[in-house]
Length: 427
Image 1 (spheres, rainbow, N blue to C red):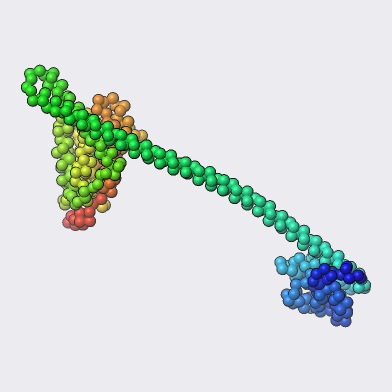
Image 2: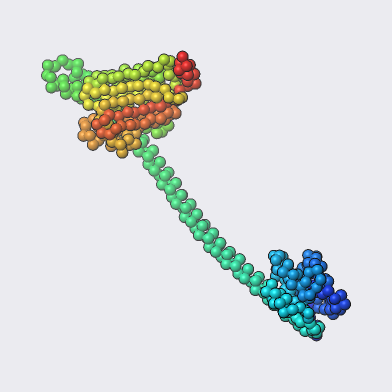
């Protein structure tokens, strides 16, 4: 054999494991094959497994008939382990029955050589099996690389799509932020314009109010003139209150309203609101029922004037939307750590679908009632805002049109009031 054809001429020698129970034959073939290969030897299957553990061979050449563990059992053991499953195995036998050879191929033998054989024949078969093994390994490597490359292409495509989606979302988010900023700016300018307009209109009402006072001071027997002056006075006063609500909402929106917090008795706030609304209630012939029967004062931390405004607006709202001679009930109770104030009326009620709209700044809930004093909802919007500033909440309930309404305000009580309420409950 020429030097260029030797496997070791182009790189390190392949390692062979030669398994043969005849020591003379084993050592002779190992010495002969050592020019092309690094040859390890073993006398049976058990020794062969130990040799494989010490150094993994490129090919195992094993006799079939051996003591302790024969060649077929060695083959089975190698094929059962992931680390040795791919090692090519050449079975050699001159005495084994056909069933052993058949079983060997069934267990995955890569080749078979019958004794007697020549050294040249053995070398050719070993070279062919090693080339075949290298070819399979290269093919498997290419397939693995191709799979990795294909997976990488898929992952890159997924990443590209994800980045495109992310970029699109970022652009949409930026657009939404710009739109939101524009809406906030437009809302701010709208509020400033409304407040400026309300302030201007209120200033224009001052000489009208003065003129009505002059007309009222002049005695006149003309009943129509007196009724006209009274009507103008009521409408002017109502317009002033609406403009005041609009100005208050503008101050809240701009954050220019600050609470003058102090510990106040809630019953005093309610009494103040009742005194302010009583002329409106009496003018419409309503009955005002006060249900404040607490054994101890209910104390909250809040702004006396602003809370008075909250309950005045709720009471005046009920008076306005209750038919002549109706009933308005103001009640105070405690639930847990909250003071609960409810304003109930026997008025026109609220449709179920409109309950959440009554607190909007421009509510159309009552406009369909075709009443001359339909409310645009500015008062209730302010009530909700002031209640939230005090850490409380407000809700509306109605059984539907014609069934009356209930507005409920919940405000946190101070710790002293909670302790006194608990003591009163234990007595």
